[in-house]
Amino acid sequence: MLRSEAGDSSFFKILRTYYETYKYSNASITDFKSVCENVSGLILDKFFEQWVYGKGKIELNYNSKTEATDDGNILTIHLEQVQEDYEEFHFPLEINLKFKGLSEQNFRFNIISRDTLLKIPVNDIPETIDLDPNNWLLAQINSEDE
Figure 1: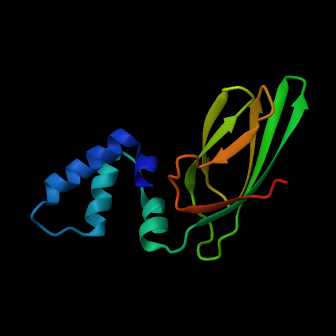
Figure 2: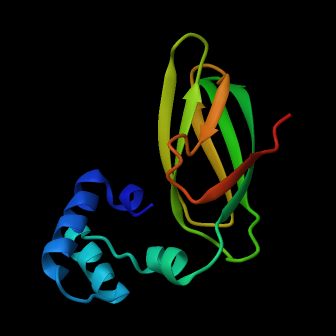
Figure 3: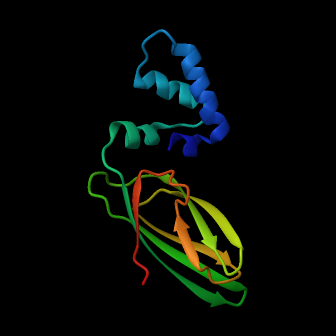
């Protein structure tokens, strides 16, 4: 999940830097966090609070509907975090939409609340909606669509 948060290039640079800095010695979680932040340029307080010091996993229920508008279609996806172990996870969520034929679209959203409504303009009605298609997240994702 750190790889998804920091990106491939930063993630592998983090690993190399951490190894070179602390090989043959002891290091703490704080040391690792410091390397992650210095290399990536990100503030990772929330990430470490959730995934290192916190407990539980993301439990996400969602439903979707597509509505026609004057400018095309709007896909609305309602996300609700329902886990009990942790109040509200913040995480990047990738969504893959597949349409008739071989057409598909990918989106990435930063989820920062327990209840989220996404509105995505689309040309056609998606045949499939895949949340976290590459399984980056430690999550249980449930569709409530019929």
